[in-house]
Image (cartoon, rainbow, N blue to C red; front, top):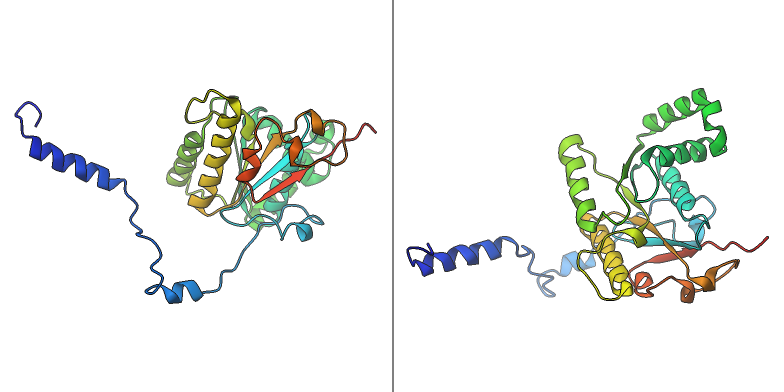
Length: 257
């Protein structure tokens, strides 16, 4: 078309290509969509931890994002594993993205948590681990653990993997865990790290909303959260914008004792 100077044809093709990516929904028409608006919404949260759920509305529901906030070595990953184990025992399909630890190590953490065994003793109880895995399968629970190199996975990487799981295995998760968002790759280059982090967390929230499922991740505190049993959002590391995208932030304190 360019070589033949057929610019009108080029214009039509470009316009059609742009339209292909446009949203099909035009929005909520206030007068026409009265009945849609009057339908009662029922929130269906997925349990996070027994005993904690009553304080957090039963857990996270579809489209919601939660953050475990703790100092380095303060238990962020173990909290994510615990929440993932709770979902598994409730018969949910869980996907756990690890950006720091290997898939095998994370799997062993789940073994320890699900069977109430110390991590160092998991290898001593293979029959218990196998028996409990069969019970989880009977309940309908499934767990996929996927490792990406630190700083190499973006929200686009995660979306691509989710589509691959769905198309190849028919696996559609009920809940997603990302361990952890601070070490993900932003979709664009920013001069300041705080802008990169805010962009990452906004992207995760976008996945939760688009897929209609809850996502848990974790973040580190700054020095204000070190060696304390309680802290506020002023202790969140690098970018307060991370908390702005979340429905729930749970701080895990670790005092000296």
